[in-house]
Image (cartoon, rainbow over all chains, first blue to last red; front, side):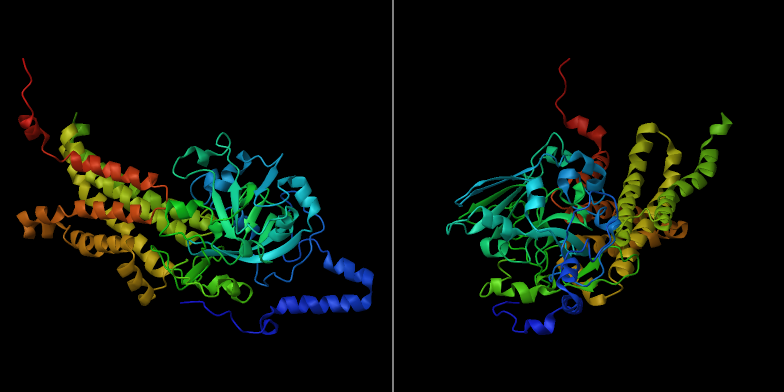
Length: 321
Length: 207
């Protein structure tokens, strides 16, 4: 299917019910007094109670971009992961998570920008307003979760480094530490893991850098201490444990695309019309629903079409899968 | 010495091998009941039953070369049971796919068979070869088919090749695991080459 036109449904018709309800709650709170309003907007882990496993992230705000779907259990979100750096298979990353050293952690930002530089993870956690974003996550392997991320818009961070008009794409790089990460000693992949976004995708308000989930800092297997989350794209785009961001002129090489270009595109937007060569993308299985749950229908752009379809107007998404 | 007679080995060995072949299933049931199966039980069962189909199939194919090497003729008496257990795990594997994965959605299943080579290979191995071999595995059928039985049951090699391809074609970038199965199968197939005749072709060593 060609997505040539943006969807014309007015946003008022699509606003999720709970967002609507939350807004009304805010209006009520505002009526009760400005002080109450302030406490109503700064809530710890709104959609999901923190499990008390890791350090809590303070002052997490709610976001209008959160879905009202029930988040996948913390135990499932943190035990079913693809993070080859920490091992093959879904359970190895959780087992090997302790091997990933997340302190000290420095993010280097350079390339086509006026103010290249670096920023430590502590400054990232303190310097950006952390929000809870409850997003659907759709893996290219046809399974899905609902994850209550904590993070902030990527564009807030990118803006600090003042990208120039030459910056057309953003390239991301995962930590390369083969002495610590067992998967990086296996030469199947061209380490380090790389991903990339077009500038407008990177600047989109839905695109976040996540620092936590369930109100607490990210566990290693989920890409601690800092990872990308692009909810309308297949999960492999949401690169984990980022140490480098570079503004570039041309589409940057990305790990899975280079490995199997006919299976994993650069764009990798969730698209039920374009099957993976080896399996259907029409449906997915929700993780944690047990033995007899039916698969669900996958939606264009993972259900975020209203917000992102306009980014791809005029593009043949069959060709640019 | 009589305690080690082949008859005794077979008589006591068969129930033992039968139980050993059921051990993976018991482990799977335990994992399923205890919750140790993980967040995606359907995927876990599919992989588990697929792995054990291939493993028992390769063990079945190891009987003949083992017998030749060790000279223990009684090994052959276990071959049918092993082969049928490979079929048993293949049935569980297929049932998991048809029922828990696809919920018998015929359209999606047909699409898979036609469009996805690894599923085509799996279905072909099962329906076209495994089922006929299982059906003709009885003593009566062995008698009735006579010489043709041996020819027919050589198709087990095709099952194994298709089985390994089925695994290889669904693997992601890292093909270590299917490669190990492929290597084991290659060795088992190579061991069937007539090496005693092969030596006749090699240049004679100078004295």
